[in-house]
Image (cartoon, rainbow, N blue to C red; front, side, top):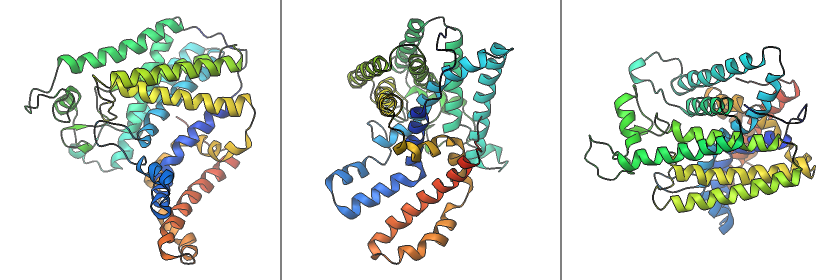
Length: 372
């Protein structure tokens, strides 16, 4: 590992804001914009509303960005936390302990999140969003720890993506008779899930969209975030960092589109082209937030997102555990009746978002942050 940043790097407000911007869309904002597009009929809003759903298989919508962007951001933050921990007396030991603890704990929390405390082990879903984030982030962090420089990590990034693609090129599912190496039934990733993953699957019955094999390419997403964090931690001038991020983002977008011709952009498979495409978009978003918030110092507008971004795990778990709908009915049903009937669902949707934000704001004011 090789980190040579300033002695005490500042916390990036842009990183918290971008994390909050990412989580905002699962707090009900997606539904809000779908309703807004339908009610207004404005082409721009209708176009954005169409982006607020997941693509079923090949292709890409903006809503498919939420998961990989969060993993990317987790990677960006790692060099900062690593630098801090390495200054401790038992720095390296503490850092390794943190890496394994966080990675495996997220896998466990993901299982609990999917199934509650059901104890129906035969029908549990073991794969999860949090599980993939935990494992991919953990492996990316270990690669970072065991490589000496950025060039080697870049080689790892492209090597993981190339290796993952070649698995699809040379292998397909032998059990369901589908000759398409990239179809829902014929791809090798779904076959590995059917072969090795116990319990039930999510979203399609022949494999899991957060299954085993795609941890390889997801690790590349985490590693891309780490490379970006490593850049932000250097002594380079801020505008040079922005330019490097813009250049890297454009290169990855082009690579994603070109690779899509051979290995389709596919979130469920976490295809190599998907990693490049969403990685490019993630870096461009990071560059934009960093430029506006940390370089130009326009910070006040981002406070709404910072409140969310300081407690992302809290809102993710709360959306599963807490019945926000009951509170929304109590506080906003009467207000919604004051509007024309067709606008009432939009008012209720806005209320749902506001209740979640106020909950996080209360925690923010009391400095209560759930971290793993």
